Image (cartoon, rainbow, N blue to C red; front, side, top):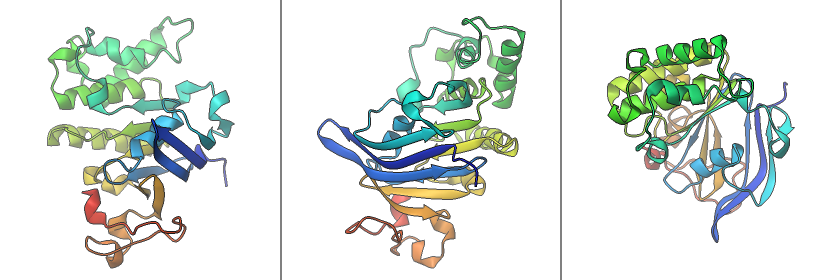
Length: 255
């Protein structure tokens, strides 16, 4: 087996005095598409933000491409798409300027060269926003803004793509564009870790689902809809390695 692209072991994190992650384990291997599922407050976003260093962990180990996260420096290998609600609004920049910022991790001395500009154009083409390249991001719809955030992450041509609720509040047309974009990235071998509230149009792409409840992993395997009747809404399904006393999950809570 190859070294995991992402590895969390016994990771704990608090927000203020409230425990949010309670010793979770998570492994994502090269080429996998893994969805983090769970109800609001289950720890999904905190988990991915801990991976990129936005949330300080209190215990455990996080490794990226086999390197301890604290010593990891090859951030051009990682593309991150935050929740749109935390990244939108009030940005006095054009679409191209925002997407270009995602290329800076590969640029020498912060100067974009011919190859960098070409990568930005490719990213805009991928999300169907090439015709809005010169527009201000403030003039975009919510779905278009989300496409720009994804293009920004793709501009660095990442090996690992981490996305936090990419479909939240996005119109159906944009959902289909984003699903097509992700399908193309997966076809090229990109490893993907997604936070999702529901699988939606991305369901065919998901290799594995990790379900969190109260900061604990309660399921790690096929997406709940695909693991049999006992995981359908109204039935209980507990991961065999769930912590003692963990509540059963009901997949109706995920939609």
